[in-house]
Amino acid sequence: MSPKRKSLPEQIVTTDDDGIPNGVLDFDTVNRAATRLAFELAAVCDDEPAMDRVTRQYVDLLGGVTYRYAAALALKGLVVMVLRDAVEVVEHVAPELQLRQHLRDGAVRARENFPLG
Image (cartoon, rainbow, N blue to C red; front, top):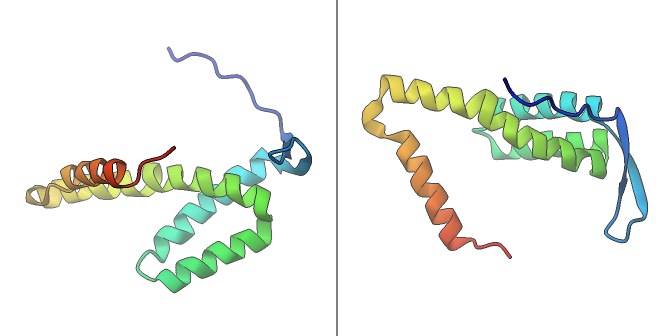
């Protein structure tokens, strides 16, 4: 049995680095926007200008503060709802490509080449 998660408030006030309020974040809006953003980006993943247009549309629609949270959640959504299934299909139909291993190798290279902090 997994531990019970605390329920989140419906909204929170966000602040800048100095602690000054700069927006109100509605979790339902963020979740809905993140799911839509993830699938809309996936649908045009072969067209970078289209991805830029989708991104701009969401920034304009949501505003900067809400967009940042939605984009972060959309990234996880892309992995969970799109990439994971795509990798499983590739592993089933073309295991010789070793896609998952290539992704792991890419993660290692990214950590080595793009240090944080």
